[in-house]
Image (cartoon, rainbow, N blue to C red; front, side):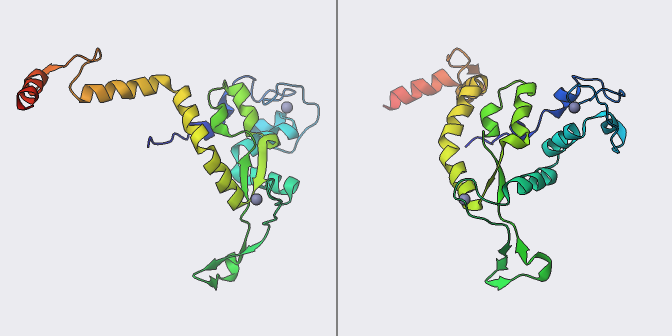
Length: 203
Ligand SMILES: [Zn+2]
Ligand SMILES: [Zn+2]
């Protein structure tokens, strides 16, 4: 199986930031709108809307995103409705120590999976990293969904990377001693015609 690329999981934050002037008083560097309030934030964020700096925080920091999703969904799985706020953790049937006695097993997932929008331009793609596209799923439902999507995802990957597929095919062909036009390559150490003739004589 081909090694999966994780590029599509990286939010295109840089593309959004490049749209607007950063550090300009009165202008938000994230949405480009006017800022009238003064925020206690430092650096760039001083000139940003507080919603806008929160929005970018959710996109860039998984821990902040998780907190925001917990506040909204209260750890309830979107598929089965089970709550996995606090689960006792065990190891080899024994409870663990008090420092990680309880844990939350719910996972942050995306309504529209990120691999499905990997081909979109950055400004459209960034929308799918926002809170509106985040969803709570329990471990089981998350696994089930990933499994159910596997075939579709592989198909999607083949469609979105035709050049790569063609390249792979070309390399495979070449490694077998044929050139790009599928003609046997004449290499001093690998004379294909001789080998084919030998095969024919044997048969
Ligand atoms: Zn803004
Ligand atoms: Zn569930």
